Each structure stands twice: as C-alpha cells, then as structure tokens.
Amino acid sequence: MFYDCEEVEADRSGLGRLVRNHPDWLAADFAVLMEPSSGQVEGGCQGTMRATVTTTGHRAHSARSWLGENAIHRAAPVLQRLADYRARLVEIDGLEYHEGLNAVRIEGGVAGNVIPDVCTVTVNFRFAPDRDRKSAEEHLQEVFAGFDVLVTDFALGALPGLSHPAAAAFIAATGSTPHPKFGWTDVARFSELGVPAVNYGPGDPNLAHTREEHCSLAAVAECEQRIRDWLS
Image (cartoon, rainbow, N blue to C red; front, side, top):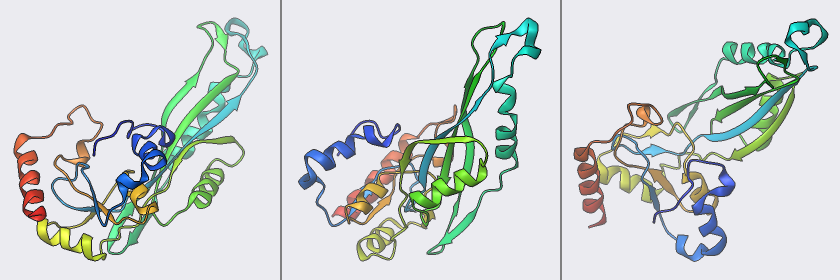
C-alpha cells in the first residue's frame, strides 16, 4: 500500500484518509512499514509535537530603536533554553529511545529598517513512546515557562511491541537485530488500530533528511529478498 503526505502534519496523512474512508483495507494481523532501517527491524516509534513559542515587542524605526522593543532579541532566552536542553534517555523493552527538543524555524522581522514587534520560534519535540499528549505538552510548558506556547501538530508514538508472535517471527525470518525507531512513523497509526507493526526497509535512517541521503540498489534488493523469503 502506498500513500501520500507521510512527512507533513498528521491531519494531512494519506494513511489517515484510508483509516477514515476504507478501514477495511487496513484490517490485518501484522504490518510492515517500509521505513529506512538499514535492513534491521526498528521497534515502535517516537511521538512528535510541534509548537510555536512567540515573543512580542513594540515596532519602531531602527534609527530610533530605543523607542521600540525588539521581539527577536526577546527570543534569545528561548534559544538559550534549547541550547542548554538535556534530552531524556528512556529504555523500553530493552530498546533505548533518545528524546530531542529543537528549534526548526524562526520567523520575525518587518523590514530592514524596522524594529520587529513579533518573533516566532517553531520547536519540534520528539519524545519517547511512554509519553502521552498531556505529558508531552506539560513538558513543553515547563521548558518554556513564561512564554506563549501554542501546540500546532501532534502524533502519538508507539511502544515497541516486539514480543508479539508475528513481530518475533518477522525478526527471526529477517535475521534482524532490533533497534528503537528514532522518528515518528505510521507504526503508531497501526498500533492505534490494534494491528502489531514494525519498521523495516533499506536505507540508512541516520542519513534521513540530510544532503547525503541515498539508498543503494543492493540494499533494496537484499530487503526485497528477505521479505520474499518471509512471505513464502
């Protein structure tokens, strides 16, 4: 099954559209999400939450900057908190998940001669699958206490579930050494549907979204053969 919009907001997901319109297509005993995983099974996935942290000021002409209050300058403590942030490491079913909180966009400014009155820092929180939405949002509010925080996107993570018989059989059939999935995948959506699922596919996940991202044809062929052997 192929679907669109896996890399953007959760409410745009093509798989979500299938859940709403054709849930019978997704009825299954087991699912394999062909995420890049270096040809090894990766269990569960992190949850993801995006939020904006907004600072405000007072607009003025830059030649008379003392008459204004610079919203971009006021965002400096937000960036400092992110720079000082120490991510939580969480072990679940023998797999260690590494959380992360980072600025992914900063917007502000009116013109080259204007003191800006609004600055918005967009942050992305990748959290271990033992957190729910309430826990993740409370953590953001704690980190950015004193600032205006607005959640704009959220998707729950998924526990590894590798002890399920179907998952264990797939691991054995592919000769995999299980690893945690760093990132959100639709394993979480299948988990919500009650369908056990794993991440498995060619390509190095450490190269995802880098300029060096690629996948060798040999890796594709190897994963194809392993899945064919498993299916037969």
